[in-house]
Amino acid sequence: MYEIRVTERIQAARQRVFDAIADHEHFFRGPDFEYCRVTTEGERDRNGLGAVREISVNGLIFTEEIVRFEPPSRLDYIVRTLVRASGKAVPLRHQSGQMQLTDSGDATEIEWASRFEITIPLLGWLA
Image 1 (tube, helix red, strand yellow):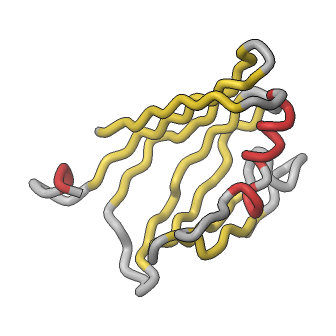
Image 2 (tube, rainbow, N blue to C red):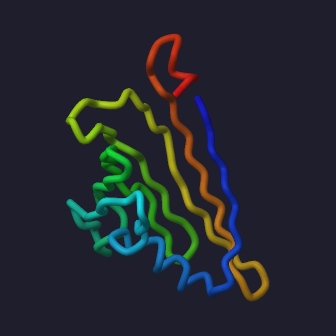
Image 3 (tube, rainbow, N blue to C red):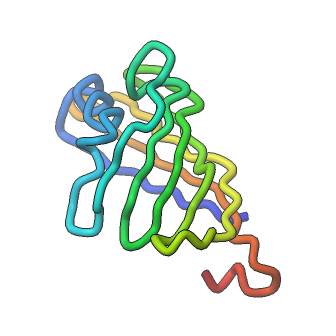
């Protein structure tokens, strides 16, 4: 099992930062991102608990589900599927992804963590 952990400080109020990262279709922007769309809306908030989003980046398509949604402090997700644009599945077992936001003076600190496993026998660690 592998874990990635990144902490970033953003000079903005926590609610504003949370609103920006929870808005999936606008959060994922950049030269490598092809699209991000909500395929299933959340229970109480379009991007909230139960929402399913599809993200296409660098020839990979992720399907993620929001499993915890606590504005303006926390958003957790699980990657349910990962496939290449060709349709071939990538052997990934995603345990959890989370974004935790805390106040840091007049800024917001975001801690992003993701735990996963590449399930290719003997070679998964190379990926």
